[in-house]
Image (cartoon, rainbow over all chains, first blue to last red; front, side, top):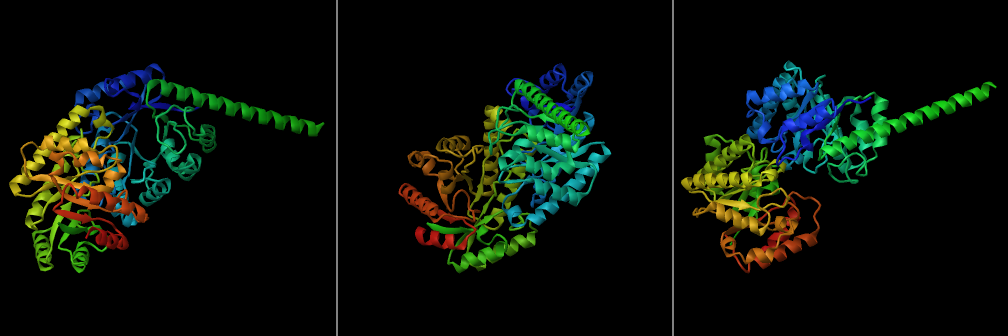
Length: 287
Length: 261
């Protein structure tokens, strides 16, 4: 039913490498690996061609699709400071170049941060962000890569669901969509309500669980998020994934997928029961 | 002790209005918050000269405060370190040209990748600090390190102040800008801090303002009282060269001004 993927967030960063994540994903028959480009081994612009080839070959051998999560620490695509803005754009352009070499089809990125200048001049910040996206999309489109802006829940983050929709409408490109992160939405309130705001533009997801109103990298079912209603909504809008499990361990990725499958089974049973009930009702009315 | 005001009190109006406002209050120092569009540090020679003359004309001196948004000398990403240093260097150059009293910077942050490689990140931080201080010394500009309150911050608790002292080594051209609201927000042990002689003697400036940050619009007066109370406590141990009042709200500024004077 769904395309499933794992994020390199599953790795123990003190000893594991990106190859361990790929091997795990292949072994457990995931469809996609999302590589977070925030470690020295895979920093855009600093990764050697041999390493890139090895990553690509290993993923290909297991028929695993690659997508990237662009760097985000110190990155601000809505910065009012020209030097930091250009720096941020360059970092994402380098990620697109890396994505092209890895034959990634999608890159998730954060719009940026909303510090004092942005809080006072929000419209201007959105214009700067839109301009950044146009520059990046120009490059991404040539590389056959879609960009996905992610919803963010932090006080200083730019990227609340209404801001993402506004940005997409300002940019107006088929190559720009949204990565919906369930836990980032959970930090702000009801994830389902926020999903409904962005669903028209949905092209990727980060699936993980957390206590209500909190951050976390828990497996689906370990926290307090109502995943049944979210999965039901995915089905209703015809969204088939990828569901990227952005959790803190390998076990949690496996548990998450199993729990989603369980929810799907439950929803199918509910549908069958309801079909059966309506057949029974209509047959009664015929007799 | 010089009383100063952060230029964010006239954030929307820009730096010239902020200087005029500070002068009207009778102050002789302004702490310039370096964030575009409030203040664009990428100035032409002519603009720099204009600013210097204007400060002179108003009888004021200034300091430059790096905004602490994304600067990170401890980042494992070399590009982040590079742009951070480039930015600090520009502030130092500008400070020299406008005869600023000092430049305030945030030393660094330990995000997830840095936390995973803490030792390496600390080495990078030490290297970055040494590089900044060395350049500032050449230009004869004093650097002040400011404490912040998020768990990711490299300078948050008293022990972190001591780490910076260690990293700075023999350099004498630096100090600390002690941010009291940030200390309170971090629940740092102030009593412990004031007992650290190597740290306390290096406190050159103190920030006073609302919690958690000067940008807060909804401010509870009692939290200001707490900040003032801690300010009085700390000034029993050290009299800073400059006390900077930082807020975007005028009523809070006036209240703090009365209390601090």
